[in-house]
Length: 545
Image 1 (cartoon, one colour):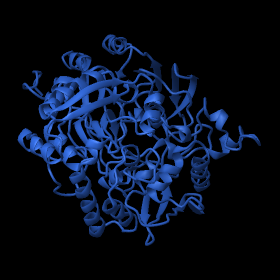
Image 2 (spheres, rainbow, N blue to C red):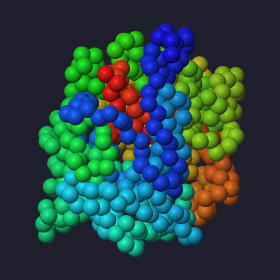
Image 3 (cartoon, one colour):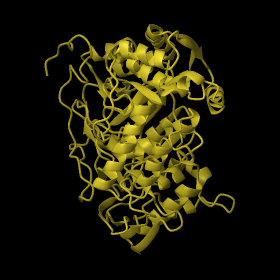
């Protein structure tokens, strides 16, 4: 690849870099593990610096992004996310997963799955993996923390009898209905399979699941084990000597370095090999540094504009449609995200990297149409609007984004006042009470499926977007219920398209820019892939230095 700057406008996703090693994508049901790097160097250490680190290492209690990101790097799920090339624009669909502890699986007539486990999986404590570990671990996921139940719901996994053990290496995963997202629900660290024998040594009558011990220790079948951990500050992992793989890096070190500029300097100096969470100007500077790779990985994360329908103007769909016809996404992408984002384009609801259910109603920038809609709704003179954000869920760019939105919406008479709420808890409390007229935030769909995206708009969930922003459409909710009772196939696809069409017409929110997942590394690092949930699987990395 030529080492020249990208053309004016949107920078290329990946430039000034040599090719990355691309791991083989494995389709669901195929046997074999993920590809591993050859030529391991004994004693080699990989250091990653992040703005913050977890308070706990218990994968079942991983409820925030950094805990999921860190524990996912050494977790041991039955199946793993399928990757896509880092330099591309695509993410694997949710129905595509890669083998990990499970070497194969077969769908059953009732929608459940018959799994067969690897026979060479051994925990860091020396205990072989068995189906009983799977049964115990999934039951623990329901009992510890709050995240597990959500993934059981996602996959329609039977919460009463999730697993039927057949023998040491075979079991059936039981479901309550046929569901295309069963396998997708298993890739997250919250659904990791743990060494039940080892954990029970540290359990007590008051703590039967060993939760206290697992906050600072590991007991899995993954490639690495915890060597030392200082909550929120540092973590050191060493290779699991019993793991089947032979990773390039035998030690993984994670350090908390809050200042983004300091993190970038550590990677530039070679004291660390990877970081993320930089400002986009810093990311752009890294892209111009020959000793670094700056990866703008495809992502389902989006800077989004939500409209509170309890606020009178937004109760009228014509006003929401007018907003969709007014926002200039290209300007926002260039000004806020340095041009590295992807513009949603004709469909402002689903992220561009998500598989489209079909042709949906489109909203291109059209000020004449927007003004006409405002007049039809009785707001020819516009109205006052407070747009709120909190840096904890949107980043430091929130104020600048609101300023640009204010300039754009002024073109149709909407007079914007910015409201930056420093505290995430205060922001959430006001949002719960429907006190925020409109908000901007950075959110993501961790499951790459339009079916999941629509399930996310559930009026029965306390903090779903539909509940928080008062979105109500009886037809949409009927279609959501119909989706739950329809087996995967053409019939479900048709229902999904109908539901997506209803929401696209209603415009309860607008995805302004699809924001890529940042990763800045040393130039010698290889093996990085793009995943829907941006986890760096350390065992897949290589070093060409």
